[in-house]
Amino acid sequence: MKRWRAAPETWFASSLQAILAVLAIAAAYQLCVSYGIGLPIKHVDAERAKLSTEIALAYASSWFFNLLVVLLPAFHRRRRIRRWLKGRYIALKDDLVGIYLDLNGVGRDRELIERLRDAQCFSDYFHERYSKDQTRWHAVHNGLYEYGIPEIRAHCQAFVSDCDLAVGLVGELTSEAARVLSQVRFIVLRSNVAEPEYDDIKALLMLLYPLHCPWSFLDGEIHKDRLLRDIERI
Image (cartoon, rainbow, N blue to C red; front, side, top):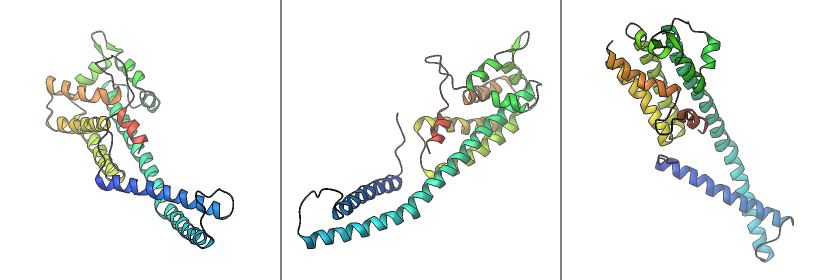
């Protein structure tokens, strides 16, 4: 999978921590050797062995301090941000589905909204007949002539701001997820200029539908949500 290149400072920090961890393993092994638990790689005199043990003990202590003060807090922060951003993304799609259901005259049924988080359920539901000559998705299209575009814009803009904050704190997204985020940004731009006209509303819905149901024109299959997958990997 192709990924964005990490920022130089991010790459350097990750590489440095990896090197420090390798050295910590070497220091731990030296301590094991000094206490007779492991076999020495090379036999040295007692004075050098004592010096090696003291250096290994000092380094192991400092790395343990680094683990407690730097690595563990960073890990917990990333986990909190991941949980928060995932919740914000799910809330965005729930809010949008609530608008679609309003336009279908169904109302914002919480149980139904949670069920429609599944891409296949979303596709099946909005392809059901709303009337004799239109599906539920057509009803969303027709309803947007009068209601919904400002609300869609507000929800998408709020999520874009949340995502910018999270990515700035923890690093880059994959190129695929970046395209999905760009799609959300484009929804905001499209909704800013959209008029209650057929072409504008159709173009807006062509951006919204893949957000809920990432269907591929190439293989005709519904794929996993790339942005959600990437958020879970933060």
